[in-house]
Length: 171
Image (cartoon, rainbow, N blue to C red; front, side, top):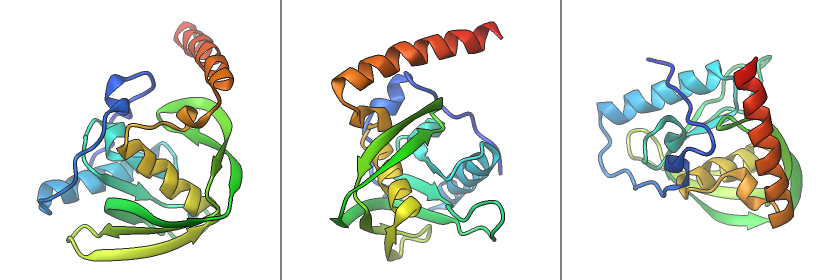
């Protein structure tokens, strides 16, 4: 296993659509392991393959928190098939470090996906896990959480983020 570099906004690769997985091999398993290790190291609750430079439909999520045993979800070709309710929660992203914003999402979702062996799976979620599923699947479509902001808030984000990154480089 290896901790990989997480791509950061405005990296163009983060805006590209990922290809479906058709081959379930050792390379896919290695990518999933690397992604999980990278997510835990960051630390974060989710990571999508494009965030580590791989345009493939693979996400890892673990919302268990540090005080609980790990509950890693490895989802290949994930898709939200049912959604209901509305939730507005503050989100962050490992690819947009140090920036947080309130994003409107569905409160409850059902995700279908394949496990690392290619077996079909279905998982219902609400709360943080539902938000994480939607957030990570967005990455597979080339969508960042800041893309859900209003044009005005996106404009403010770009200015704040540019300044934040300049300050980080100077430090």
